[in-house]
Image (cartoon, rainbow, N blue to C red):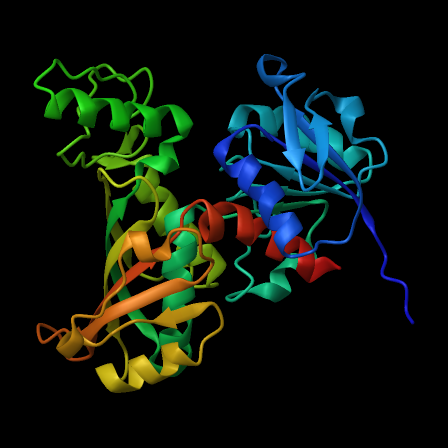
Length: 342
């Protein structure tokens, strides 16, 4: 019987939504862990977290935290990643970073295992986990491109509040309670913390994620455009996006429109997607079957439905793409990247 090699693993940001989900997914997928270290900022240090049958004490992260670590999963924000990822790599760890800090660095692979697994092996210590909405989009796009070649991609997202963190989830719940009770609704976290103006998300939509950066685009939209091109090795692909925060707890949705170079019917696209890794097709209009965020919540698949022709262009398709943004959009994709290396 061959003995499976085990690894020393650190999770940075272990008390956050994504960090906690990373821990769950490591256990679920039986990642071969020798020693597990849970790390966070000073604010969360000394908290107790139950992992399986064991209780761990969260340690304050520092450069020395990564001595002897084989894999470090970072999900504690871009500033902390910029500071400590190089320190982890210096000490021999392979880092899978969930922030946007390194995604567009030329020598850092940006990886979705169902789309560009070979890129992971070209790392120099850092592998970037893409933006959550980009991940689910490219999983759906890849089989279409391989068969009929993408000409243009237009995405409109409907992004859950869990993407803004635990505090934003609680704010939405409180807003709903206050609104239904006829009480004043408090705001502070949408479109983002520290914004010059905050919006109520309960019973509302907010067409901004993150800060505005150029020509009226917000950062999330620019991420989707640039990351899609990098992951799919299509630097000239015309991509545009409008990202919207919606009052859904968990699970991002995308209304996706693609223009292709060659003919591809809706039935052919459906058959391709049904055979694609990581995709689950739920598409039966006659039975009112299509994906919803509630259906995707807690699962790792990228769900695709409402596949139909776009009659406004010669070779066009519309589809609806839904996925759990905390799992496949962050935690699970990160663990899958590490699995490619072992």
